[in-house]
Every structure is written in C-alpha cells, then in structure tokens.
Image 1 (cartoon, rainbow, N blue to C red):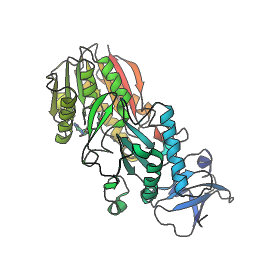
Image 2: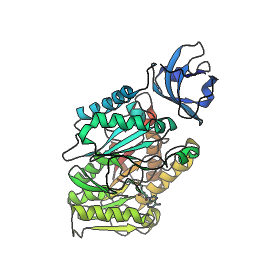
Image 3: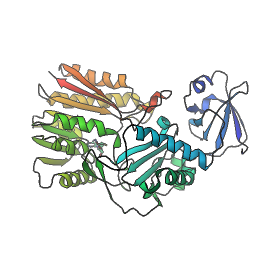
Image 4: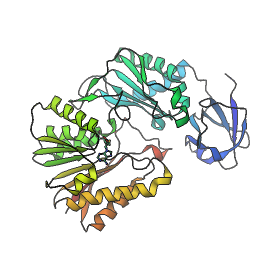
Amino acid sequence: MEKRVKIVLKSGKDISVRRLHPWIFSGAIKKVYGNPIEGEIVNVYDNKDEFLGQGHYNDGSIAIRLTDFEEVEINAKYWERKIEKAWNYRLKNGFSFEGETNVFRLIHGEGDNLPGLIIDYYNGVAVIQAHSIGMFKAQNEIVEALKKVLGSNLKSIYSKSKSTLPGNMQNISEDGLLFGSAGKNHFVLENGLKFFVDWEKGQKTGFFVDQRENRKLVGEMSRNRKVLNVFGYTGGFSVYAIKGEAELVHTVDSSAGAIELTDKNVEMNFSGDSRHKSFCVDAFEFLENMEEDYDIVILDPPAFAKHQNVLHNALQGYKRLNLKALQKMKSGSFLFTFSCSQVVTKENFRKSVFAAATQCGKTVRIMYQLSQPIDHPVNIFHPESEYLKGLVLYIE
Ligand code: SAH
C-alpha cells in the first residue's frame, strides 16, 4: 500500500468518527505528519494512535471527508466495488436502465459512502459532479469503474464539476465529455413522461431527479384542479399535473431558460394542450398579484441557505414565501412546500411554515411530510444527507 500522510485528531474529536460520521473539521486536527496536497488520501488516527479511517484531504473547513473506516487500497477494484454496491442497491429497489423511468441518481455522496461525489444517470449518460478535489482527481478511475459496472448501458460520461468544486480549484476543471459522444441534448423518461435534460447549461446535473415521487403525488391529486407550480425549472410538477388531468396548470420561474425548458417539456408530452401557461416572473411578485384561485400551489425554491451562518435569513425567507402563498390561498386548497437547504432541518422548516400560517391566521393540516426518494439514500450516521423536506398542507 502507498505511504500516506498521517493525521492525528485532538482528544475527544474521535467520537463522531467512531459514530461513522464522515466529516472531520479542521478544528478537530491535532497534528498533520507531512504536507498533504488537496484531494490526497490521508489516514486518520485518534490521539492514542488508533487508526480511525481514510479519506480525502481538503484545505477548507471540512478538512477530511472519510471514504472508509478501514485501511484499504484505492485502486480500480476499489472504485468498481463502491459503484457496484450503489448500483445493486438501486437494482434491488426496482431501478433499471429501461422502462418507464430511465433517470435516477446512481451515487448520492455520503448516502452511498462516497462523500463529495454525485452521479446522475440520464438514459445512457452519466453526469459526474464532484464537490471535493479528491473526488475530482479520482475522476478517471471513476470513469473506468462506471464503464465496467454499467457496461453497454452506459453510452457517455459528462463531467460537470466546475461550479461545485471549492472556489480556488474551479480553474482545474473544465466541464465536458469524458467518454462517448452524447449530443448536446438528451431525452429521459420519468414515470413514462418525457423530459429534455440540458446537463451542459442546466442547474445541478441538469434535472432535479429528487422530486420524482413528489411530482407523482401532485399528479395523483391534480384531477379537475387548478395547479400553480412556482419555481418550476423544467416544469416537472407541471407535466405531472397535466398528465393527472388538471383543469389548468401555471408555471412560474424567473429564469427565461427555465421557462423555455418547461414549455418544451409540456409541448413534448401534450402537444397543443392549452391548459398550460408559463410566466417568466419573480415568484414573490407573482404571488403578490395572484388572481387565480388555485386548488394546488407548489413552492420548490432553490436552497435559501448554503451555509449555517445564513440559516436565520433562510428561515425568514421560507416564512416570507409561505406567508405570501398562504395569504392568497383559498379554503380547501393544498400547498406543497419544499426546502432543499441541507442546513435547514425538518423541524426548522416546519416551524417556518407554521409561523407563516399563524401570522396569516390560517388553520392548516399536515397531510404528508415528504422527503427525497430512495435513489438519494440518507446515511444514518450523517443526518445532513437528508436535505429535501416537503410538507403538503390542507388549508381549512
Ligand atoms: N421544482 C423544480 C426545481 C426548482 S429549482 C423541479 O421539479 O425540477 C429552483 C428554480 O427556482 C430555478 O429554476 C430558478 O430559476 C428559480 N428561481 C430562483 N429564484 C426565483 C425567484 N425569485 N422567482 C422565481 N423563480 C426563481
């Protein structure tokens, strides 16, 4: 095995590692024996010299992301094993490369014991998004392992890490194809509905794979109802609502590109259907001037907080947004409201929505508490990986 830099933790800082939490903050480190470079694999010990785990070294506040709690060699077989495990889990849960759904998350970072790595599968194309230098530097090995595990079901691999790597390292990454020759654009099927995914210019890896089950629920509740999809992006919720025989569906997004995608996706599934209309406008402005008496309103905003230090503002943001919607919503209607901020807990989100309801004097019932689907598994030792939270409220 290659010689590795040894890092010793301060007394007591081994506790969370022993509970298999994969992050080590820089403040927990007592001594570094050597000069690790960004992304290098290092070995971590407690202050009595007992081995704890191995992981990718980083200069930031999360100094080490542990990939393993045993000492193992990182080679081609290692990556194959990890990716195979992730794929087997999905296979067991009914995912396949064909059929009604050919888009899913193959690797969900900590949830798949690969902190810092996201891979989404889009009908033959794997889009890799590294959030750590270590994962980015391992990209070539990951590519080879993906080809081995997915075989002929993999036509192309696209790298999209420029915007997700730490600021000082973004210049080492260029987005682009690593394998195969997928064209610029791509079509996927989700529960039999067709979507156009633009992984080159789109947000995240190109599509919000995590809302699949929640979109389905909207579809099931939409019959003969008027649906408003705020922060629509690709129009995912809207397409399901139309499929579910909604009376009318309106999509709101402040980005012209998002509205274009929505219109394209609606047209592709329901050509010429006049029940859908999209609005390229700020969400708050739209809600302020809202005239239609919608039966279902969906609020799926971008993460309001990316860091703990802006948590308070984020919670205020959720409160303001939900207040705006609730004030306008009629009695007997339903609100689907989401938060995808990792630092906002389920309880905090619920409190913000609760505060909004109290402020506008509306009584609401919680019908469903929603989360992320099974291809976004939560690492039980890393509660932060449960990032998507949703509530479905019935307004009395
Ligand atoms: N619901 C979507 C994902 C939403 S992503 C899905 O199922 O795929 C968040 C979206 O909010 C982005 O498309 C972004 O353009 C939009 N957005 C961000 N700020 C906004 C604002 N102030 N008003 C309206 N849309 C906004």
